[in-house]
Image (cartoon, rainbow, N blue to C red; front, side, top):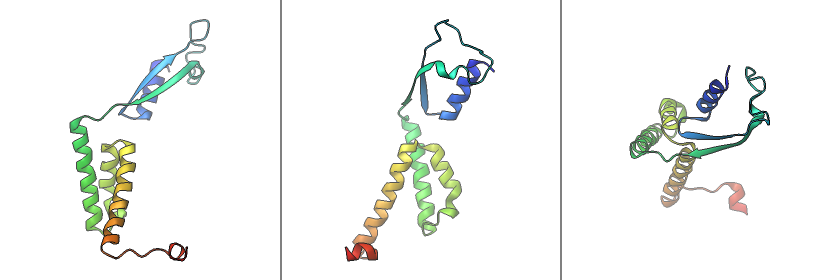
Length: 130
């Protein structure tokens, strides 16, 4: 298995929205030692820089649509995530990981705010006594 195959495997592993930029520092001989070995080339990489590329307008719209569909499913099923696994999977495959984290926190906040404004929020015993 050559270097190109390893780079392809690594790029596939890292994800489709991440562009890899490698700075290859070869051994002083200028060649890779035991090129056929799957791990011999790795120590010669001095820098692996991962850069996120911004999603295009179409990718953003697909992400937001997947988020909205997932949230709608949760609303219709009383926040039972087990009934929305397929939509969650689509949501996760359509959006960058950081966006997913943000949207999950945002939904939690909006649900808390909704309960609080309706007077339905009940603090835990620990919060109430402190």
